Amino acid sequence: MAPKKVIITCAVTGAIHTPSMSPHIPITAQEIADAAIGAAEAGAAIVHLHARDPKDGRPDQSPELFEPFLRTIKQRSDCVVNITTGGSPAMTVEERIRPVVAFKPEVASLNMGSMNFGLYPMLGRFKDFKHDWERPYLEGSDDRIFKNTFKDIAGILTKCAENGTRFEIECYDIGHLYTLAHFVDRGLVKPPFFVQSVFGILGGIGGHPEDVMHMKRTADRLFGDDYRWSVLGAGRNQMAIAASAAAMGGNVRVGLEDSLWIGPGQLAESNAQQVTKVRTIIEQLGLEIATPSEAREILQLKGADRTAF
Image (cartoon, rainbow, N blue to C red):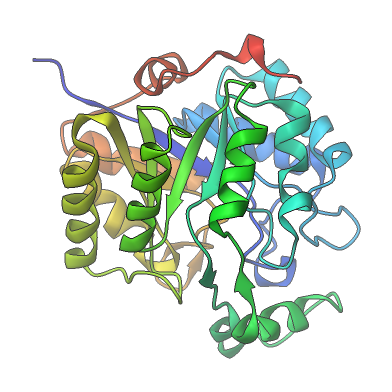
């Protein structure tokens, strides 16, 4: 039997970390495009994309900021493009969904529940900030709900129902798997479900190996063969969780959105560096990485020719 193909997703820039935390976070459209293409060349079949204001690095869901790097990536790479509907916890749902509605990507992320999204512990590690929005953004997370109500989720699913976009369903806790099951029962999500289990964010499930196993056991029981499992380990959890999940038959996500590090105390210099490291781990397990065309087949995606960019 041929080895299972592992899909690597790379989350290129995100909204968790601020520009002052690492000089390697891509900010401008050209930086984001180059980072995504570099990650794809290193082995990522999917690139997960946010946009930032090029002046100060603030997370921004304006479609006009997405369009330049979306077009560049499509011209230079065959990778699958995954656009966020998470945006930033400080945004409204209406703001967050704008680029997905406009560009109709093959994949979009979708958070499966409201939660306390605690970023404020980062203030203990990072003291100096370049921009006036950064410190308040982190400080305010101790009293900020990342809002994803049942109505919000249903609205996103309904608005995208005719676009053929498949969702990377982000589950930060066990209850989020049951929320997904609820929307499956309502007929708003169709298999195969691309379930991204997120570990190590304060407010969600932890990063212990038992947490990883509990997520997988629950998803197996709820969805059987109807889902494709992937994992995201935040911060120092990134590579350990990726390795354990790949060994259990899962797919993996890395990238500077999820972790700034390549090793203890060592900043990753690029998204491609993290992709290369996790690819090495996967291949040392005797597994193979999926190409973009194989990822499209595994996830039953509509194809890049049916997007609006």
